Image 1 (cartoon, one colour):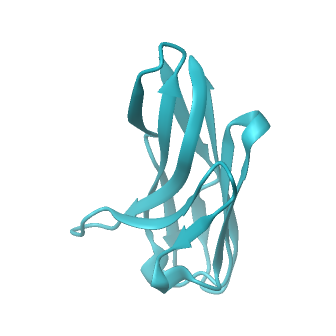
Image 2 (cartoon, rainbow, N blue to C red; image 1 turned 90 degrees about the horizontal axis):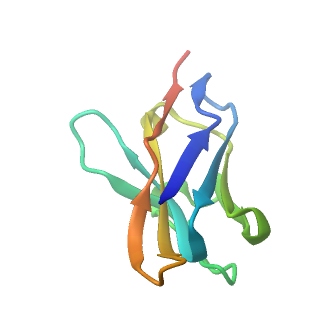
Length: 120
């Protein structure tokens, strides 16, 4: 069994910063891509940023230059540094992993989400 656990969400003022973390644990053989998605009330879940095991990154246009994704492969952990936050960044942020377990089964694993609220 594999789990992804997010941390670091909260309430921040516009222009402020937050750092999200997501740690994967369990019967992990490897994790290809890891990423962050978000879902605001009444909207579909959308990709925020993703990173491969080799370090290649992909960002939504709306966050380029403000949010930075990174990962520590040794710790199976992915981070999202969020700067210059805007009210429209308010959403539940979900961690995602493209996981291969020790049984060599490959699947998408999701965390439970962490709330980020940007408000004055």
